[in-house]
Length: 89
Image 1 (tube, rainbow, N blue to C red):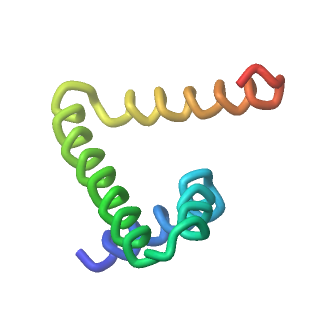
Image 2: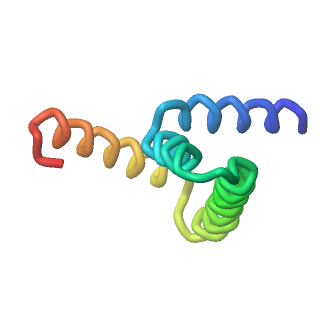
């Protein structure tokens, strides 16, 4: 169990570094005197988002095989990447 906890932690931690959510949180923290409020609110939002992801994926994988979901997610990332490079997104 510790292996999956550490793997999940590092995957989310690295993915979130420098993304728009972190930048927005930093901006919000500069505009308020309640940095702990920003920290707690952002932390709760990330926890809720992760919980929704886990619950939804548990339900979806009962309907759609995981290898199809992996293919669809990979395809979506490639398409978004190409569109971003072409300036369409």
